[in-house]
Length: 209
Image 1 (cartoon, rainbow, N blue to C red):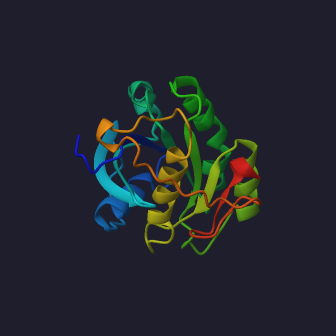
Image 2: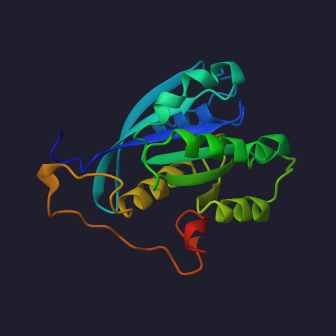
């Protein structure tokens, strides 16, 4: 392993079809947005190095299809994931209503019971909204998850979402192991406030609220 890398984190992006999972990933990886991006078939995989609070980690990000006929392909990809981004479209209530099913599937197949979960309300650039921020926060709080709203189109909170997830993973004891080259050099910033607000991104750490 690169001696500058603290560890490698496996991250999942899950949710209904057409909520913007692939667009979020491509915006984060390449800073690109394609309004005509094709639907994911099965699972896509990309990697990126990020530095959060002085700690550099490698992210192995799995973008899973939301279409039912591909669901049988995905259970094995839940194994050993340290973080999961669960996405819905704020302009389509039906995608929010399916969030419980995705979290149930995550709980069923994940092999790490303290996996860090982030609920993302995507497409805040849309003119019509069917799910309020308050509803999203309430849902995330009920599931002890981080919460943030984003837009892959406008870039709002995309990078922050991944950074906050990484920060929370680093702060979770027993969820990951540091490289032997990094022993004794871990510096973790504790900046979650008592009311759960994440000032950097305008999101919410509902696991603390």
